[in-house]
Length: 72
Image 1 (cartoon, rainbow, N blue to C red):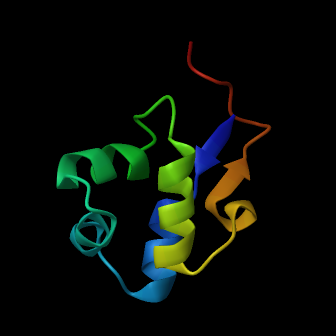
Image 2: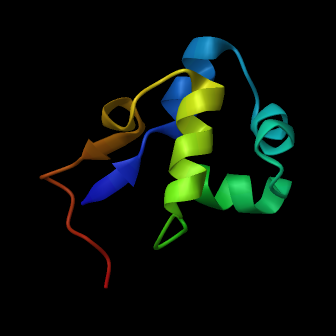
């Protein structure tokens, strides 16, 4: 299962979900859904913004969990 690594990146940078929502121009609720792995897709535009705001690469942003089955 591929998951977003946003929570870890925010923690490492000492930033909050609220800060991220303001930086991205997204609602706090949508950012929380991304952080909690409750979204099924993410726009490439948002991947780019996340990478810019969190100063990371897509490799840092996405993690593959081979041990955790994907919910379908």
